[in-house]
Length: 534
Image (cartoon, rainbow, N blue to C red; front, side, top):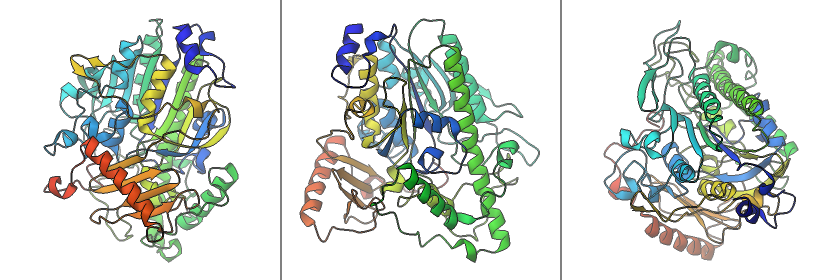
């Protein structure tokens, strides 16, 4: 095994051979939910995320890293290394009657846990699953030895409180149902169980893989009072001024390059100065709670780092941090009444969410929102940290994708990807190994082929500097030069029709290979609402 690990990284300058370690590296994958591109300090935010920022300053950040624009399809690709349609989740956790849209992971798409477990790793998970509702698709049945969390796409964070009563929070621990107790907060509870799993696993002598899937800051907006208090008054300046603050900070950090064009102002978002006093009170409260939810995630990542150090595993662990999609747009109207609320924003019984006006800030400097294939929907912060191995303090273009996570983890672990698993022929991995970029050998992934997307009729292709994108129900392509126009402000399709034709052909070939169907022919009678069921 030592010789194998040496070969994996042979020729990568500036990174010691992994064979110098007495044990194979541990791997932690941290995913947050519905968080925008600029919502952590390391990507320009004012939200207090010192622990995530520490990982960034001591590791490598990507300016460009892609997901699948929405929860379940992203998680399917992340955990299998397959495009979502190939894994069976091209739409959501809803069965549309075709293999590519069956709404649960197929057996040919092997999970990170199945492969790493077969290669001698302990496999642990805490948080949101969202990969199939039936118990045969739950994490314990797909390779995870330990699991604590919830199965569907959303959950309350409290069970009951002083203001109204929320629905019971139903959780699963190793296939057994339990409920959140009064006074407990789900983000803390997810971490409690993850740390418990690590403490127990430490006795095995094996390396571990931990998938820590926080549901924050996904709706409903519910946070602990002490965290909300930190942000009182911070958002009185409104979304227009806050966006400018974040843009300036991104330029200082080097996340946003001086010659890159940013997304133009969303005309559906009203000007902050035009709101009434009462409207401002409502809207700033939303962002105070949203910030508090992310603050609590960061606090819990701090707990994780402390535990790693106590277990003496902090110098032999890769940590990857990212989000499943961009911040959630939707209703921009300031007159819309809150839905279902039985308590103030932030408390148990609150079912509010961030909404488009603040999501416009969260996705700075990008265009559009969750479920859309413009950059604001599919681009996430990406941080990799591994002392002595991942290049320290680097910010790179990257242009990675969630399908790249699996081959990267397997290469780092020296794990063999099987041709067959439990009688099923395993699909070949779709992504690329990120180690050359993470080690500082390359500035971006050497892919050699286009990246493609489809979800509910929304489509995109990225190859080199070019990106074409189409928003349902339209079938026409827009074309952008992302090397200059990160905000997708200038459609060049009329100027470069040959580029559009070339990329559209690649899309058609990819769609045929992965099982993409015409959305008009398969869409449900009542398409999934955004927001609500996601």
